[in-house]
Length: 485
Image (cartoon, rainbow, N blue to C red):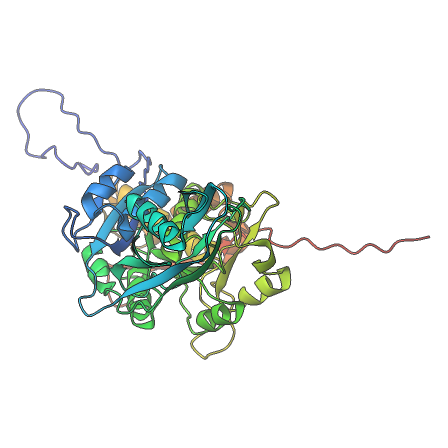
């Protein structure tokens, strides 16, 4: 009997027709991509720290992680931009040794007419009503009361005389720089009223992101949101993501972070990192906090990359991110410099919409310390990940329990046997299908350089070396006009 059956025994004498099903040739693949969001919880939430939980609704996140918590805000920002990608959240407790950031709003002069203050706390708009003749202390109390009434805000407030002290709900560095301002959209201030602002500062002691990384285990999360940019956490993140991308685990993940600061501070920060699996968006002076921008960026990127890992992300809207003021936006040349420092950039439209300009990784130098652009764009590791997955899927689907023989072996038709030549043909067929998807190009060179062979020392092992030519992206168009008059 030449045919290899899986379940019908050879020693069968009972009369009847027996048919087994085998899906090796079905070729139907389905992938549900997943995102993991790491962030801080409040003790008012019900979810224990360090345990991944699937989140599908902002109200669910509020109950799980506490109203006004960082993680609840991250989940809401992600879902506002993307409800299609499966999202999991991993709660972290505050660092017990940390301190909370604090800022202030000072009422410098009292209003002489009634009106409404358009107050923005971390990009969230609040309306504060004032009356003519209110004292500076009264206005300060009204501002504090309005902040405290907004329970989803990541801060609380207290007023003393003319000063409102705004304090982060969480300990740690993430809330340093949290934006406080009025009239983001040039809303009119009540006559006579003047306010001065000091953004939050003094926060210290982030949680350890390793708790979230350990919680991910060997589960394959395609993307991750990390709110922390301190060196210790980034080293842990880069090390784990590099290991997950490696051949022994093959569960690669790209992490999204965000950094706020001056142009010089941002470039300095980026130039010290070198991971092909971390992508950092510079936020400049955007009122939207970095921990929310990283979630928004991940949401937008994940939705597009799941559809096509090779298609550039440029022009995609960062839904929910507020732009820096016009006079504080970086020029084209300034953004170009950041793209050489491992920092992703965005542009701002005339309507204030923020759009991804170029999503790059933080990889900049090879092992010799020389400049290397091989992993510059996030599409490169994303496409490599998908190619590897398709190759693994092909082998596991078509040849799950096959025997291995050398080319030229005269085995019977229907035998569960595979040879190097068969695998070579399958790899070529797969490459052609990926070419049709627009992931790769140059089939002829791939065919010429493809090597498939049995291992010289292990007869049960099949080796191959291929050279996929990843399709590139239209990033720059340049023309030269030599005009005639």
